[in-house]
Length: 358
Image 1 (tube, rainbow, N blue to C red):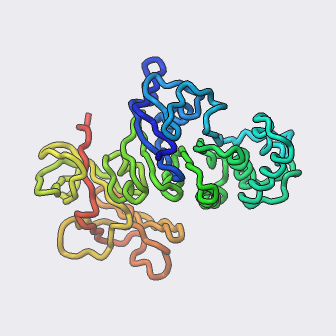
Image 2 (cartoon, one colour):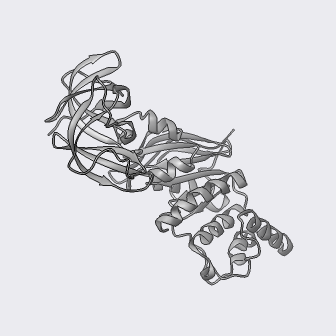
Image 3 (cartoon, rainbow, N blue to C red):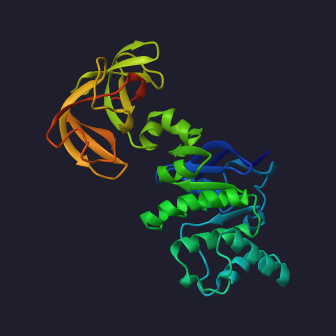
């Protein structure tokens, strides 16, 4: 059984369709993320699931039962906000116990449940601390504990890492995944950060302009994007424009704008003579060319050091090719200003139809 099912959800504000006929299911005990740019409709979608917005059409089901007529506080869904909304005048224990008290549970059960959930999130014995005494990561865990002590079927997380610094965000990505496993509760997470979605999720829905472009595992979205939007939004990529000059099987020959001709896999329906956009990952590009297609000569423009994520930027025909270098050290094959030839296999490039230049 699915813990969450959304069927043909639509939400319209005036002339703006914020969520446009969205359907998806979230299996029990999974980590499901909705990934998309700001303004794509993901927060509106989550607010409908939480009960803070009413859909204009469609249905929302928790464990198979519609909750459209159920008030937000009576849905088996809890929500962690970006700014956490912890009560600063209460202790940690009082924050976690708040929902239990509202539910009318007795004092001994509340004390036991608070102690239990603190132990499960790795913060035993902090009941009497003030919220101001906690670190950013500890506050995140307390916000989750305050929800999880109520044993919801689904936990909604609305960009909860957005206010943290980069180092803490990287740490919390791992901790959130571990907590989801610890509680074995369905997490529905929304974010504009593709790294968060790829690292933590079992499945990801990529959202654009109110619709889902594609739903799949992180590996599927990265290696088999179903549209140009997904290919460009998920992961680092080189994106070029050109015109289709020939089609053969699942391959397309494309003349780049002010550049050479290359061969790529057709990611969707293409028509000879039509515009196309081509995507290929930095890690698929080599500076050790062999005979064959997709050889691009150029000059090394920049060496970008970032540990294992270091990059070489090669300028070819007035465009930059981003090449994954790994750890950049004395063995780096080129220096700035060197001539070089980049090469990538046709199977590693994807071409999608592009709008005509206007």
